[in-house]
Length: 355
Image 1 (cartoon, rainbow, N blue to C red):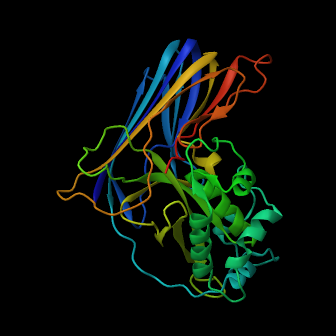
Image 2: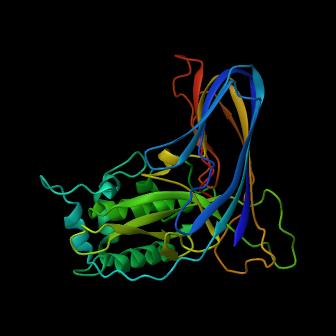
């Protein structure tokens, strides 16, 4: 199917921001299950400098610099993506053998997926994650089967609750309270897999949702989404490479390269910190208000009728300099915790935790 995505981010500042530098991850990837047909990025005010480069994980990142005073920043990304359903593929390699493949041993061949075995800013190592995951990792169980069981348990044991967490809520806290949003569930599942020495990565993207029966699709009422990928080697020794299988604990769906054709992959990383849609540093703008609106709509003649758990969102937030706040439901913002030391502020717009 073909999906058109509009992702709009708007900051209103008071007083004006003097100068700013931002980084955006808003261009969908080309993968085995999706093809980017068209993409455009509108930024106002017009940047003094703008470049697009690939990061270490193959994501396209847009850097832009604003050198004029401004009271509003608007970033609008339009993307047209062609997606397809993931193909079935079984993998029977036991999870213990995958763990051994990624265990460090001098002179062993390097596997790039090993980078996703270690801790990262939002995914620490803790015994509680291993304890929660333990029932899914019986002896000699294929990793594919164990990961699916873990996904199903998170889907069953945790309650999706908007506003129950913030964008910077630790995964361990979300694990303890057994509720959160998709960003929390993704971080928890990644932490559980890495606790057993298994490579898992964070995926940000979009999910096509359906309006209530008889209601029109509302512009700006969708939201971005988050799920995970697990690396499965082709063979026991892993020397022939492997494939990434995607798991969405929020909606209890999985598939090779994507959980389904109604998903769009935006970026991949170790955790949310690597792929936040918009981040930056500003000088000025002591107070600001953020609004994010996302629209995902099919362009095919027949609309998608698949079912999934979903939440809609378009919200705004007000924050003061020196305070770190965020909604795990969608938008999040972190700022310099020491405003007396500098007028510069660091921003992270985390709008990929809504579904």
